[in-house]
Length: 330
Image 1 (cartoon, rainbow, N blue to C red):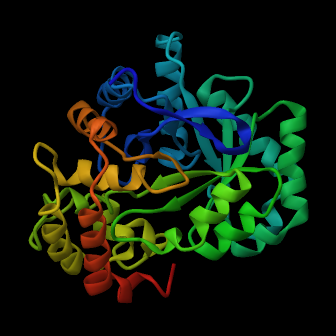
Image 2 (tube, rainbow, N blue to C red; image 1 turned 60 degrees about the vertical axis):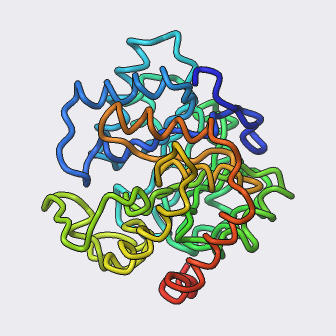
């Protein structure tokens, strides 16, 4: 797996592995993860061929960035593109998306990661008006000119936000929820990104673990796990938890999805393989709490493309059980 497929990452011309690593789990909101365990996860990712880490300044209030920075100092030979995000450590007020704040936020991330220039900075699901703000995108261009960042992108909640961001000439990437339970981005977002040369980062690829097929309707998560406290959007956008799907419905649909897994592959690997082969996807970023999960996820890159019969079955499952819940909102 050290030779995992690499894809050109949009307008930035950077390259990323088709399976990356999301590091929300290494910060907070998924239960406690010890530092040595977090470092072991990062090491397993690199050894599995992953060259792309996605983090954010708000994950553990900087803890995820700091752990990644510590790891990169230990492994200077690891050629990793690190994407971080900014903008959710303050009130979600469009007036706060200014050049001065962007400088302060990126300076903090540079310190956390121990780098002079950030590889990629993404606006972290900002208020919708920010996507139409010339001043905000001019400020991002200035950060590139000043050498604070190499490139910028956006993390979005809705397809409409994604399309607005893709139309911006400086946008290198769009991060969006995409998985077999969230198909709407296939209709317009991925084609528009491919046409514009914008990279697509697929997040929440396993619908917060639902698509692993490991959960039942009686599964209980820890009190400090967002799958307990954000099922209905109590803390942040509901779509970030189980991709916005009702848990009981998701468990039922996941059982049906698991039946589509090819011989020798698990349900999670099948979901990741489905995402990888969607035209326009640059990298998919499953999270992991232990090295075994990392290695299993990375194996999705080595699976043969899913046949058309499987793709059709995914579409039918979505239409039958999921579409009515999520399509109109995201």
